[in-house]
Length: 341
Image: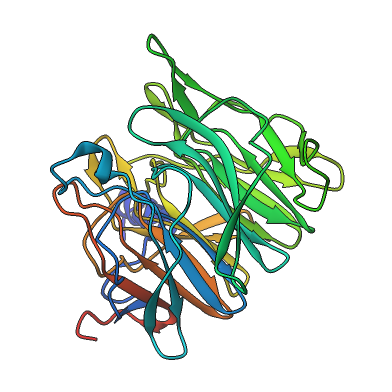
């Protein structure tokens, strides 16, 4: 073998060994199984929380109503995974809305902020599953907004980021607030540290090991490429490895869904430059790295809900751009992709 051929083969082998390999959707792990359809109208930008092994989904938008004010929905439904069944519960007494935040804390559900088609909102409501009643709590203490994120860590809830159009400018935010519903009225919200980096809306958040992670979203004309970790004990944010965006991997997006399962975080669906997405990305907390998983098996979509009940995860609703969806899917991360189930 001549030296030139040897060098050529060496370069090819080095290139092949260094090249990143991304999972093929048809041979990678991650399977989706269809469950009972959401019993309410199909909708985008719904909100959800989980209490005692049941998921509560409500609010959102459906454009099929002739009256524009009816398009912003107020109804709520509860899902029982044990029998794969949806049941109606009390409507929110406040206005129907999109882009609201929701979470559960100490056995009760909470929802607030959002946009009702005319106004941006800051009211906050508490749902008691024992009485099937909603009670109003302190208004969110930041600016009115929609498309914020929320998370719960160490017995407190946190709400921040988002957007608001004031008639002249679209404002985006990077402020955060802590919520304690057990405080007396008037002092239930406390401002905390701003998230690092850019203002953003349409981000997503998930929690792991008593820390929170906020990533994706957009700021005006560009997608935010950082992922920030929040430590509630120190009230500090630190930046993890930036999200990548190139010809092989693109995690950047707006209005995605996320969850944590089996010590891994997941970001999926959403949109990028008006393109609806169906890819799924798994985050390794220990190594601060991302791996592409099998695609979501339903339609590509944006503004879907996701919820974790025990060791089970469900994703559904949202919009494909032309349709408002009511399908619900369960994720099986350790199973092979199978589009026949």
